[in-house]
Structures are given as structure tokens and as C-alpha cells.
Image (cartoon, rainbow, N blue to C red; front, side):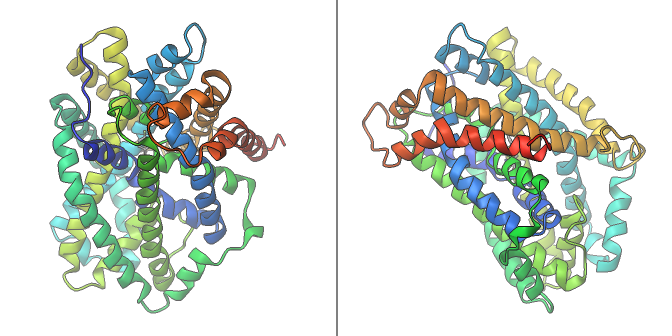
Amino acid sequence: MKREGFGSKFGVLAAAAGSAIGLGNIWKFPYIAGENGGAAFIFLYLFFILLLGVPLMVSELVIGRKGQSNVVRAFKKLAPNTKWHYTGILGVSTAFILFSFYSAVAGWIFAYVSRSISGDLISISPDKLGSYFNGIISSNIEPLIWQFIVIAFTAFIVIAGIKKGVEKYSKILMPVLFGLLVILAVRSVTLEGASKGIEFLFKPDFASLTGKGILEALGHAFFSLSLGMGTLVTYGSYINKKENLQTMALQITMADTLIALIAGLVIFPAVFAYGFQPDQGPELIFITLPAVFKEMPLGGIFQSLFFVLVGIAALTSTISLLEIIVSYFTEEYKISRKKVTIIVSFIIFLLGIPNTLSFGILENVKLFDKTIFDLFNFSVSNVMLPLGGLLIALFVGKVWGTKNAINEATNDGKIDFPLAKGYTIIIKYIAPVAIIIILLYSTGIL
Ligand code: PFF
């Protein structure tokens, strides 16, 4: 069977950027930056993106394009008769867990889409937004229905093979989202009392960084760029041999980072202007954004459009999550794409239920002192992705070899790799050492 490839350079770029840009940028980045004191955390996050994110992204893309198969088989092909393909199995498992809580949050976005279109949301006064949002997510039926819709939508797109269509529309819609974010940022920074929020974003106090904060900055760099679980290995396998993977990695990283920073510029000035708490956790954007829209002319319309676009950004990420899993099971076990997609989606929905109910009847069910949602969210970003990133760096640095990686990144020597030396040093030494130190430090072992 011939592997389906991406039709155009733009298709791949849109799909990979679509995977990267999602709730991580608009929902998660602001709230964890808020929990970790703002600027110092953000600088560290940017540092990890540049130092580790870009080289690891190049690594995943080259493994995928060289391996020409799903994430597990790619490792088997490049290192036959070894156990390295367990890195791929870790990636597929991470996708299950990530999707199960990510779909809960995407469901909240869908709930907000329906409430902004109905005109309900715009009528809520800022001081009531917290209880309004909590009323939605703590109910035991509605959020599950939205979560189901998110998963079903994703499955439908993956089965129908209309990803190309989605990419085509994303090409238009993501710049619109970007434009809207910029408009919102302007509104937010000109609110009275906004300057404290800007300070919070840009004036670092490095003494405030904790071990946990350092780990979260690292984990979120991976989460936001969709790294450490083979998503970009999978997408890399669909990329044409002529494309320049280095520029592609840079472009995806820049777009992703820019969107996160602008989201920060929307949220924090408003947080301070309205007297919200920056460290209130996952509900942060759901309370802050509607308050900003309320202050804008045509706010109701902008608000509906905005949540629709964020919903689409979330879907282009969930598509990539499902794709890693589906490509693995279809290729390795020769089961039809449709069957795998339906079964996997069902399992993810089952796994998703306790995540969603963590805000309702399961609120008091705690493991390791965390609700199920917090535990899943924490394990993915702060354990599984850094571990996956570490394994990928070790694999390229010590097993497959950076020479082979560079050869693939230069299309067999046809294009330049100006930073090849730096890439080698980072992948061989800096990335493994940094990730191990951070993991040990944050768990208190070091
Ligand atoms: N990068 C996505 C975001 O920031 O929302 C989350 C994600 C999607 C992570 C797909 C990993 C992945 F495979």
C-alpha cells in the first residue's frame, strides 16, 4: 500500500502548525504562566523552546521522514532488533492520555461557542463569570456531551480523510484567529489598570522560580510544540523528500510561540484590570476573555467568532493526536482505518469521562493529591513528554547517530544546515543532561 503523502508543502506545514497551535497556547500557557509567577517562567519557557524545542522538532521530523512509517515502526526501521521502538509505544500511550483530558477542555470551548452564539455569555457581568463557568463544568451531563462531540468530530475527520480540507480552511482561519488575538490584545492592554499585567508578563523575578516551575516550563515547551510523543515523527513520515525540514521546524516554532505570547498579552492585562487572580488555574481564560469581549463594540459577535476559531484550533490538534494512534494500529495490526478510529475514539471517550467529572461529582477523588484531570495533565506534560524527548535525543545522539539525522535534514547533502554543529552538541549532550537534571531536581531527588 502506498503511503498517503501531503499534497503540498503548505499542507504539511498547516497540519504540523495545526497540531502545535491549540489549547496549549490559548488555554494552558496563560494559566500555567499565571500559576508560576509570570515573566521569569515565560523567559525560561522561551529559552527551552529555542534550546531544546527546535532541535528536537528537527529530530522528530527527520526520524519520521527517514522511517516512512508510524512512530513505532520508524524506530524499528532505524534501529532494528533493539528496544528503541518502545519510545514509539510511549508516544502512542501518551496520545491516549493527552486526548482524554484535552477533549474535556475542548468541550468547554464548544460549550462557550454555543453560549456565545446564543448571546448568553455576553450578558454575564465579570464578577459572575467565575460561578457561571463553574456551573457549566461541574454539571454531570453537559460537559460530557460536549466532550463526546469533540471526539466524534475528530474521528469523523480522521475517517473521512478530509484532513486536507481542514488544512485548506485552517490556512484562512488561523490567520483570522491571529488577527482577532491582536485586536483583543490591544483592547486588553488599553484597559484601565492593565499596566500591572504587562509588568507581570515582562518583568522577571527569577528568584520566584521553583523546581516545579522549571519542570513546567520544560514540559510546556514540549506540550505546546507537540513534541516528545512522536506526533511529528508521524507527520514527518508524510513529508516529501524535497522539503526543507529545518525551515519548517523554525516556522512552526515561531508561529506557535507568537500565538502563545499574544494570548498572554490578552489575558494578563485584563486579569489585573478586573482584579481576577492570575493563579486560579484551568478556568483562567474562561473567566477573563468574556470580560474583555464585554468591553468591546460588537463584543458578542467577536466572542462567538473567537471561540469558534479556538475550537477549530483545538480540533487540528486532536486530529494529530488521533492520527498517531490510528496510523500505528492500522499499519501494525492491519485493521481498517475506520474500525481502528471508532474503537480508539470510544476508548478515549471512556478515559475522558473521569477527567471531565473531576470538576463535578469526582471532584474529591484524588490520587497523589491530585484530581484525575490534574493527574493526567501533570503526567503528560511533566513526566511523559520530557521522558519522550529525552529518549528521542538519546536515540538520535547515541543510537541512530546525528550524522544520519543531519544527512536527512539536508536532504542527503543537497541543502545547507548552517547550525549542524550546534544541533549535534545539543542533541548529544545538552538536551539529555538538561532534561535529566530537571526531572531529578523537580522530583526532589537532586
Ligand atoms: N500542541 C498542542 C497544543 O498546544 O494545544 C497540544 C498537543 C497536540 C500536544 C498534539 C501533542 C500532540 F501530539
